[in-house]
Amino acid sequence: MKNVIITGASRGIGFDLLKLFNNENYNVFALSRNISNISSFKNVNSIVTDLSSPESIGSSVEIINNKIDSVDILINNAGFLINKPFKHTTFSDFESVYKVNVFGLAELIRLIIPKLNSQSHIVNISSIGGISGTSKFPGLSAYSSSKGALNILTEMLSQEFKEINAKINTLALGAVQTEMLNEAFPGYKAPLSSKEMAKFIFDFSLNGHNFFNGKIIPVSISNP
Image (cartoon, rainbow, N blue to C red; front, side):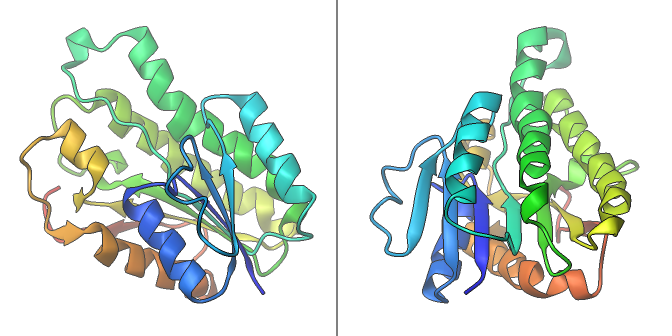
């Protein structure tokens, strides 16, 4: 049975991913700040995790380490978005976004390195707005720049992981109808549902490492 870690698993794409892996009888570790709606799933290890806290991340990884010998798939799905004009985006705003989207994600990856092997696949969920040369949208300076940092981190880690031959890729998503999108852009209708995108990510996490490594792959049928 393969071991899968999903962050941000309590809603949106993460929740739909959890259901897909659970239905296929994978051993799932679901990390989220709120696990009230996922703790009842059978064969799912629900772990309260705050990605803005290195202590919380460390505690979660310790729980995982005590239960499994290897990590087959890690999907870094959790994200934090602030939509406000740059002139009103404070140091604290940038810090809050980067703690979840970059620092916490990097710490989680760092701590699970001993559990990775040649068949392991890390899938980072980024944004099309984090790719140089794509259309940018006002109000997303902290979010989009954090995703740009994630994209570069992916490329760097693909080189550092050559010794263990683990694979790491990033999917840069366009607009998807999720709770986070609704909160940031009330009334906006995305062309893809959370379930549709989750199915794509599910398939890619299982097979993408056979074809890609260290790649930033745009996944969008719209602008954004």
